Length: 251
Image (cartoon, rainbow, N blue to C red; front, top):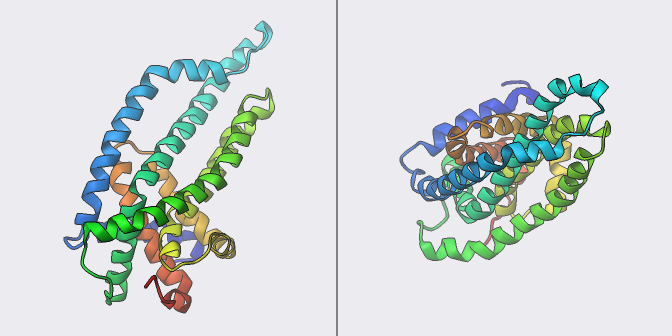
């Protein structure tokens, strides 16, 4: 067994194998197509606005410090890429939330070797929409105040130099929350209980969130890795939660 802090890549790798298996492809293709359309639209828009956004974020320096522009410009490009990535991931996961919840259920059934859930039906998927969207709104409520604080920090001269690393740390943590919440929600684990459990598994969670964060930054590859992250998070839940994960799911 790998050390807990190094378990993230293994979970994601196994998750990718699972979503490519014939029995689970159905639950991957539709959200994949939806996210592809969203991704292309966002990249097109960001490509036309990128220079303007960087110029807005960049601090105005006196002439005698103008040489620092060559150092600061790459930093703020990275900051902007992180912000665009967050925006895409947020909207993509809101749209795909019902599919991801359903995919997580099916992955757990495959891993445990017991599938007590009914066969796929559009009716069951539609019935999951209110619950999964409510949970996504809860994630958004957690994300936005912290993201806004970081965004404000990004405009404060000198202090904004630490904005990019803080975005990175926050992003890694949010990736763990985003994807591990799907199996947790399927098991009716409350939001605060889920956060408390992730804090208990802090290094394992950061390991998983970190590798997901990295692969989702890669254009095109990130579209396939989103369902892989759902599957990997479900494996994380089953193995790290242990016997507690045997709690009864929704009726």
